[in-house]
Image (cartoon, rainbow, N blue to C red; front, side):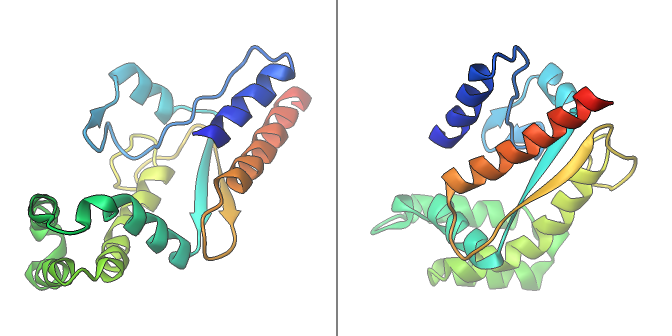
Length: 180
């Protein structure tokens, strides 16, 4: 959050009245939160979409920390039940063998194996989602705005470095807009 605040402050210091809003462009639902329809519509026609690219090792580490952090420690039967239910809801999309593997790995606390397997499914879905104009994950249509990859190299996540890389892309985008 602090890294994103730095981006906002820098833009403000430049005297620009046009601000940028950073929202995970996943779906109308992000976790338990629901985006208002007007925000969702704005996302679909954003002038710039920045896709963050991380190594598999960095992604796995970050996702394990985010999803299997302190809640999965000790006696976490409630957490395991919720995670198992989430995996089970993917049965039609992943198939019975995959769901069985995921639940077994989850119960064995092999969270890295769970993440790696789920990324195979979600990466394809996210790639189609980012590319299309309606956000269905079908890959149909195309975005109004430019899609730019920002790659954070290495096996760990560095939020400050990522914010700097994103800011560079924002500045380049804004400079191109002024020229056109």
